[in-house]
Amino acid sequence: MAGWVFVDEILASDEQSVRALCPGDPAVGWRQAMRRAIRDPKELCRRLELPVSLGNSGAAEAFPVFVPLEFLSRMRVGDPSDPLLRQVLAAEPETHSPAGFVSDPLDEQKASPLPGLLHKYHGRALLVTTGACAVHCRYCFRRHFPYQSVPKSAAAWAPAVSHIQADSSIEEVLLSGGDPLTLVDSLLGQLVHSLDAIPHIRRLRFHTRLPIVIPQRVTDQLLELLTELRATPWMVVHCNHVAELDEATLAALGRLIDAGIPVLNQAVLLRGVNDSVEALEQLSLRLVDHRVQPYYLHQLDRVQGAAHFEVSEAEGRRLIAELRTRLPGYAMPQYVRELPGEASKMPVE
Ligand SMILES: *Cc1c(COP(=O)(O)O)cnc(C)c1O
Ligand code: SF4
Image 1: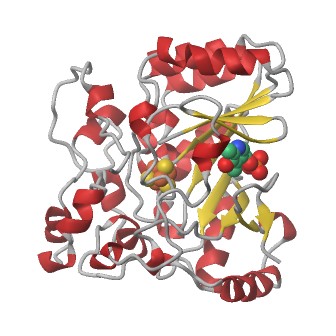
Image 2 (image 1 turned 90 degrees about the vertical axis):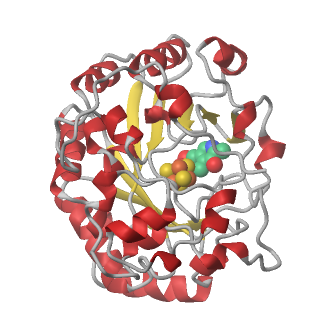
Image 3 (image 1 turned 135 degrees about the vertical axis):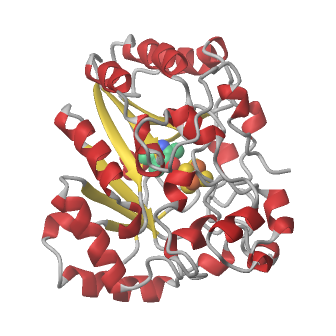
């Protein structure tokens, strides 16, 4: 059973009027943008003038398609190998399951003291705040995560918050998911303030794809919430290809940075998306041109349904060695993989 939840539950209370505006229009609120996201692989193909046979509904049953128009608008029409489309279109190869590709590749359920809390690394705990995302990435390592057990109200987070409060070795909380910024500001605010009130928490880190996918999410209200914290906020966004960085997205990242919030980017090395030196170079350069620091380049986690995205580590090492000859040192992401049971992400060497 796939663990995803649709964002509808979270958005149900929202009564913004429906307006027919163009994709990327800043007048479309972020929740509205989520509500009108494409959820049918055939519709995605039709919008891009591609044969509908490319979209595989069987694969979409196990993990539904979810693509906001803001993200769709950055894809090339008529190109079945567009690097953004490839990340989000439910495709036939997902239904193949080679040996070694499993539902919980990181054995995360073992590192979970409570539903929704992962404590694997020294000083840092990860809170799975929600099962909802602003886009469904086909290679996602948490595509089979048991999100049903994730708290869905501020009160339901209380046990995780108490656990963090009782363990003074935890000085940083990562808000992850799903995507924590799919939470409406009132709910996010309650959670964030309850964590901010714990004296030994020094940093709150948000792992999110929302500023990339739906840049309207970076609202004044969000900036206010983040800049009024006692703890230091850090933002880790997730962008795999330079074409994801359109003007509206770069402006949203700029607003976060202007507000004093450090922004890092993590990417996943993906076959057919960014598995060339040029693609990785362009991504890093565009990020640093806009003050965003490349952080990690992840080796793909071997999750069921994602085998066709895998780039071998030998190939990855070759790409990284070449990339190093082209980029300033500060623009180099760390090429890492995650191994169950290890005390940190491991450099691929
Ligand atoms: C990746 C991860 C972290 C953060 O690791 P950093 O190397 O600090 O970015 C923390 N907790 C869990 C469970 C993780 O998977
Ligand atoms: S946004 Fe992150 S958590 Fe959500 S589907 Fe994509 S990779 Fe997975």
